[in-house]
Length: 113
Image (cartoon, rainbow, N blue to C red; front, side):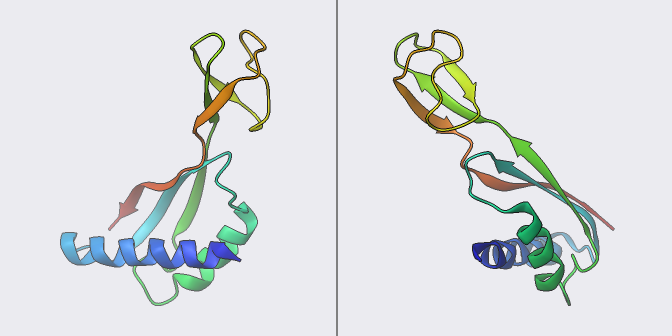
């Protein structure tokens, strides 16, 4: 379950930011998760609650924001949103696509006190 290690990384960022900016509690933490990131949201939510114990994000609400998959179509030279990596271009129906987004996961922001 790599969601546990993802949460350990989030915890490290939260602790670093708490030291740097002097906050004690995170009320809400928002993460952006790309369609192709391979993150199981239920597992991430469970791991978040477990890993954040004893740190400023303990008890924080975790909000997950979905980011679409994006690809560059070599047939029409447009960047398009796709649901699956092997989908054809929704504009020209070409099959020569290179994924350019949707595999990321990042902290968007934190509401702190």
